[in-house]
Amino acid sequence: MRGVWAQVRDLLLRRIRYRVTLGGVLFTAAIVLVALGAVISANNLLFLILATMLSTLMVSGLVSRLCLAGLELDFLVPEHVSARRTIPAKLYVRNLKTWMPSFSIQVAGVEQNAPAVLQSAVYFPVIRGGATLEETVQVHFSRRGAYKQNRFAFHTRFPFGFLEKMTRLVLRREVIVYPCIDAQAGFEELLADLTGEIETHYRGLGRDFYRIRPYQAFESARHVDWKATAHTGDLQVREFAREQEQTVEMFLDRDVPPEQDAWFEHAIDCCAFLAWSLSNRGAAIHFRSNGFQFRQPEDGDIYAILRYLALVYPQPAPPEPPIEETSYKIVLTASPQRFLDAGWAQARVLAPDALPKPARNRE
Image (cartoon, rainbow, N blue to C red; front, side, top):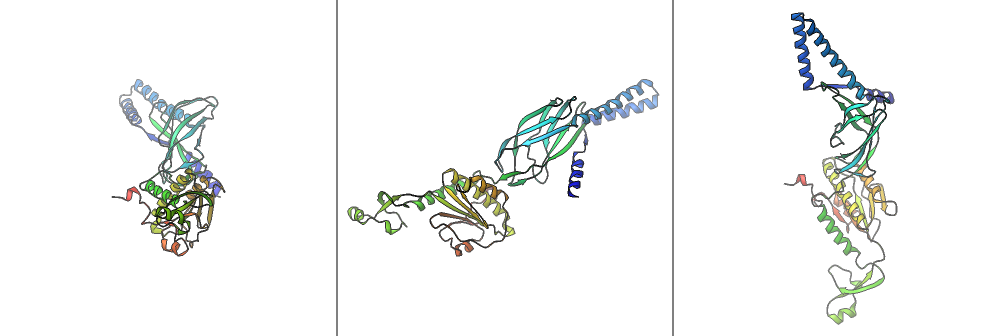
């Protein structure tokens, strides 16, 4: 039954819709005036003119209907798409009619619960019979998620512009749109702070001797070189070459109350931005969420994490303890105390009061 209903719905969507243009209104008014004059005066010439005008209107409707018939649309976007970013895509229009061309065809996106994906309409003056035309267009996805239905419409006013005819069609092709990975207000400052903290966290790890340098606050006393300290009079520490790469353990808490759904979406954007930026800087990422974990690059590339963030949604779940002791830890949660009690005391916790707020919420 669902398949039958889907076919019926597609037929209803593809039915021809009409809109009378200003030229059509004026032409209709002229037909009415000529008809009145022909009836009142009984002039055969006016009847001939009236018949010509009516036949012109009928031919216009028939030709425009034939122009829309037999058109096929295909729409291809890049493999990796991020929200709120304008990207190029390919639009293909094919005329299935073997002998009759289609004239003055315009392809536009259709809004449904969200802005249309296609930024602007595309105009084709003529599409020859059996030909396929290709056009590069700009598309924009306003939010993350899975786009399973993309709606488009064919428009034409050919040949005389009295009526604008339109037919809609739905492309059933799933497109996964990642969260926005562009820097928003406060994100670059947060990334700079985290980068400095990560470098400090990993400084001195390893066994191969690297150098002796002055002691810095909050460093472990086990690396103090007492001979160098006695010689210089200031605390000196031994620094070792790092044996392991920087690993950042990120945890996204999905247990978010309904009133903080907007913050959850903002936290996902921040998480995607941080994961993308840290990955480009060469850091290994151990991404975790409630019931999900992924190591990059061991388990795959960064796009697997972005794909998860594109489809994730809030869900109640208990906090999970950290796994790696030496990794630098970042937690995005709306309930920081729960994670502090679960063993994340050494982590950088990004709660609603610590995460940079969206620009639209600032005064």
